[in-house]
Length: 245
Image (cartoon, rainbow, N blue to C red; front, side):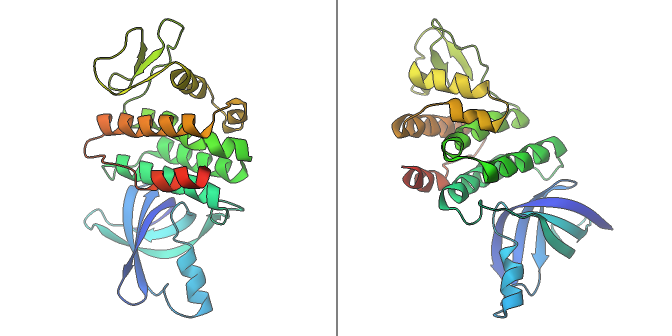
């Protein structure tokens, strides 16, 4: 059947001399892979078409969809949202690539999840408009809030007594955990503060230095590895830290 859907590009792989295999998180069908022919030509027009399929691009698609194949085809494709900054600004692009890698590692099944799609789409829109202070905290905001769509989360019960964040249990506790996966005091308080934020522009009110951000992002990578099977490590994280330093 032919169907219309929006799609967020997760990754593109060269196929043959002029084509791409593009994996996208779509609004209607969940994760799908598409063979896109003839977009890697040396002609100016062809190069422009290939640029649509960068990670984090949000596209309008008309797709030939079949439940009986793993590789779909596209009839039409165009920008659904034309970024002003995400694909050209080094800092914002590093954040977007971190978001896309985190999302890709968590999306284990092709089933549609429209609420997750709209959350990611909205987050990318906000990132494009974000001030520098918001951009710096955006990876933490996204990682903390997107987890709930995958069935786990950090329960925000931080207090003077519960000042340890146990990453295995996903909650704040009074006593130091017997394992190494935890945050304490200022870092734990910062996580609690970001968990309370519902609108990304409020991230400007969260004051963190680079070392705190580094420790918290490392802890959140551990948090996901503890809760998502075969999660591994985030290849975009060292790049993100370097660019944000």
